[in-house]
Image 1 (cartoon, rainbow, N blue to C red):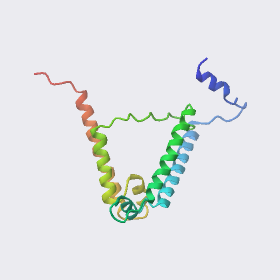
Image 2: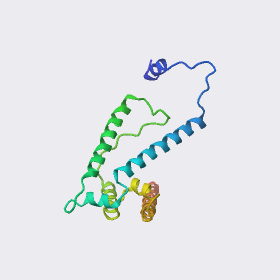
Image 3: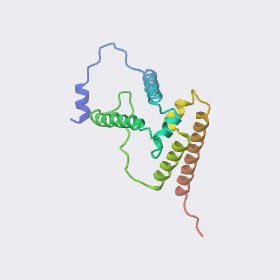
Image 4: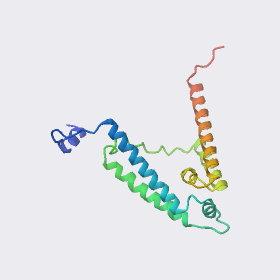
Length: 175
């Protein structure tokens, strides 16, 4: 008897004639839940002031008129994530299907450092990071420019990564 057998034994028996969830219904539920989570995230960003570049730059300006309020927002987000990460260990799979992501490798390499530097420069210069920029795009004129630049940068990195993978897979030329 394996863990799967135990899980099936604990599961509630289906009622005879009860409708079974279809793939379309599950996909719709995932889409609705994803939308609801994204909407909640967007509202949280707006309420916290993270869609306001002046507030973000005030947080980053530790030598001037520093505004530490975003540190509390970030601390709250880390707390929620830490609890969710621990709770996911008690569940075999996500409620709407799929698998949980693997834990991060923890490796600090050049790719991570360059990405962090680009993220930090974009955040410091424009006052946006990706999530708040997408939310702010609905109400400001300059955020869509940031989002477009971000998407172009992501496409370039994807292209470089793809080219590197292809190069590594090709056999060396014989002389």
